[in-house]
Amino acid sequence: MRKLRPKDSGESAPGSPVRSPVRSGCLQRFSHHTGIQRSLVLSNSHWSSRTSSWGSHCTPLIVSPFLRADDCFCASRKLDAVAIEAKFKQDLGFRMLNCGRTDLVKQAVSLLGPDGINTMSEQGMTPLMYACVRGDEAMVQMLLDAGADLNVEVVSTPHKYPSVHPETRHWTALTFAVLHGHIPVVQLLLDAGAKVEGSVEHGEENYSETPLQLAAAVGNFELVSLLLERGADPLIGTMYRNGISTTPQGDMNSFSQAAAHGHRNVFRKLLAQPEKEKSDILSLEEILAEGTDLAETAPPPLCASRNSKAKLRALREAMYHSAEHGYVDVTIDIRSIGVPWTLHTWLESLRIAFQQHRRPLIQCLLKEFKTIQEEEYTEELITQGLPLMFEILKASKNEVISQQLSVIFTHCYGPYPIPKLTEIKRKQTSRLDPHFLNNKEMSDVTFLVEGRPFYAHKVLLFTASPRFKALLSSKPTNDSTCIEIGYVKYPIFQLVMQYLYYGGPESLLIKNNEIMELLSAAKFFQLEALQRHCEIICAKSINTDNCVDIYNHAKFLGVTELSAYCEGYFLKNMMVLIENEAFKQLLYDKNGEGTGQDVLQDLQRTLAIRIQSIHLSSSKGSVV
Image (cartoon, rainbow, N blue to C red; front, side, top):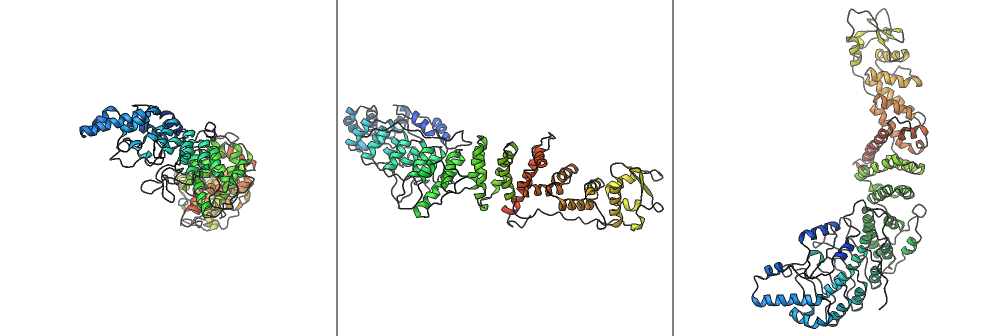
């Protein structure tokens, strides 16, 4: 027998997984706690605590072949004396074999009953299985010499074997030896003819974990290598009894087990396993050994053969699990061989890289966003992706990352134009001939603007807006004093009056330097149609030089439509604006005005609405 090195527990990705229903140390803890000890049995509550630490794929172990004394008596009360005697003899036989005395094998077998060396305990396990759990190589050899069946399975008939745990059904002696990491015993069983896939028959669905699945989950590199050498298939996964996969993302084959537990070296070993069918697949081992950088090398296409399609499905599943459990380096390994991103795996990888402050990896992942198909865009992009990316933008002081994020935001905003602002139809109000505009002889109210009088008519202004109505109502009828307007310049007030007397904005001649002040005046006097007209002029004149000023003014006035238009302009032109000092100051609030946070939130909200309209709605782009 060749000498084997101590088992390698595997190489895990740095950092703790963000959430992991499949814990990387679960199997090791089981192996540590499940050495056979006579009359030691886990209670139901202890079982529950262990299985919950693994999750839905946890594989619990039998600790002892014996029930507690009171359980045995309770189970035996309905039996006659002969049956009870046989039961106690069988129990004694298992105890004799379990003590490790190979010189007692013959006597112990005579006590087990008519099935002899292959008798099953109430837990559905044979003496060979218990010896494999203990790693007792000498006892295993003695039992094999005595005719023990190598490939007998843990039964799945609970009425006959009431203490069989569901998770161990169909396990063989090899399965138990692998799970406990007893390499010499595993080698002994395989040399003796044990089926390398356990209970799995070729071409049939598998309802229990294969030895290779368990070895991959534990991260035992030596065992994985040995099983692969003996022909184990890493593509075999586990099905539920009703034929449904154990997870929504696949059947937790060996690739997925290694990836979900972060055993990077084991995963690479599985990848290096040659195809059983002849194919022209590129050597995956060579690719990964070079530490391929995604940013520099295009992913090689996977072969389209039947076998490789199955492998691609397995790798997609493994990529999901490695990302889901926080092992981003394994995810990158899988991506580097051509497995395409899904939105979920990309987001989870980016989240871990950000949590671990791995700037080069963040840059690499951001560059990869363009490879995600737009068909992958889901609500997750809005609910999870945008908050994450804007959080990175907020926290990042790296210009490369900021530039990459701006590219992503512009890409997500899409090629469609920014939604246009439309004129508001002015409500029908009283109207006077323009001849009466600022006519002293015919006026009945006078405004004082910048020390200059402006003559107007109550009949027109009283119905123009609630603001004018309030100004006129606050002045007694017989009061001949002027109404002072101290917050609007005279030319701007004149434009407001001209708009009212002419019945619309068509005849207004508004200079570029007046538009912002006119917008403020329209907002103050509550003239919605004039306000919208000013917003439209601002939107038409917006450029990279004035966009920040327009946005700040719109936010100050509370003009939401113009603010949203500016946000759309920012997102559509962010690749250019991210180099603009005024824009960067707006985002990062370098003056400490406390607005930067709000700007990022507003941009995130605007982009979410945009993605919803062009990617997730039934119209797919027509609603902008």
